[in-house]
Every structure is written in structure tokens, then in C-alpha cells.
Image (cartoon, rainbow, N blue to C red; front, top):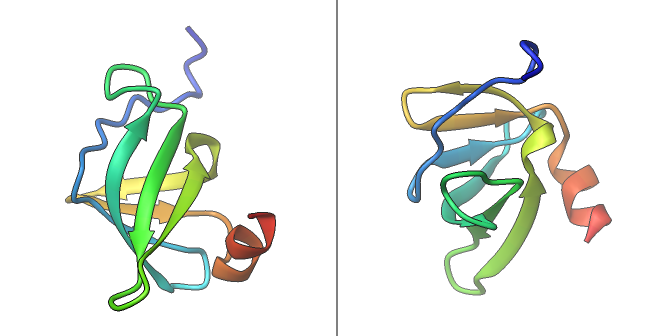
Length: 80
């Protein structure tokens, strides 16, 4: 295995923040599964809920149940 790949243990309910420090929401699912996730499904919004699918490769840090990404909120939303 490539030693540069982090083996983080993400879980549902983890908070997610973008590179520009925007609160994106909480993880609602790990795709394809928790054993080997490639993407995080993040639910954002209070009234109008919307899901963002975020590739694990966008994660730069994981600490105390909080996931930090290396991409901005605008870049994620623009990617669809």
C-alpha cells in the first residue's frame, strides 16, 4: 500500500469543512461502504437539504470527528 495514503476512519455524523472554512454539513453516508470509502455524502442545508458527494481525495485532515477538505465550497458546488 502507498504510505502517503491516509487510513482515516470516517463515520456518519462527522462534520465537514471546506478549505475556505465553510461548514458544509455532516456526513450521511460513505460510498461505496465504510470499509473502503471513495466518496463522502455530505448533507447540507437546514430547510432545503442538499447532498454533496465529496471524493476522499479532497480530504486533507481528519481530527476529532471533523473532516477538513483542500477544496473551497464554491469549487465543490460548481463541480456538481
